[in-house]
Image 1: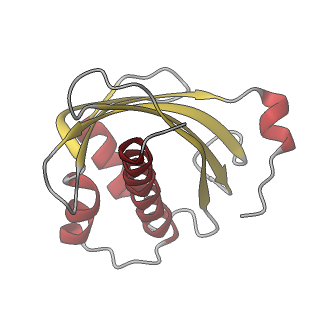
Image 2 (image 1 turned 45 degrees about the vertical axis):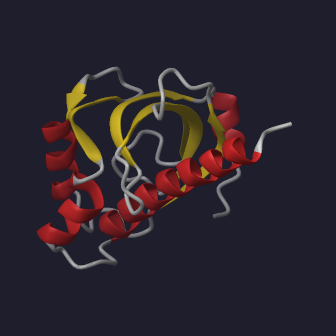
Length: 157
């Protein structure tokens, strides 16, 4: 049975993951102002300078690659939605460092093939010591969920 500290950490990590992805949705839908200061506060401050993303296609993208791509996607996917499922904080690898796995389900993702998809993500989060932004994202590696799992969905979010 998890301790209260483990439960609190999982809740904090889940809040961070869901908060960042909620901003992705708002940005791609164009439902927030196209404001670069807002973009920097919501995303730029979350990514470590050495951040890397390996998306399901296998590219190895830097922080600048990701931020530039995200910035240019403003309003490009009006029906876009994300749901985070099955968040699991892995055992600590160093004090305050978090390794987490989660499923990211996307609905109407115009820049993904297929546009209804699910991916399994592993993320390495570094502690910041700040209450508002307790983590900086250092590394994310995504892989597609099996095709039959993606086809089954559900996508009713």
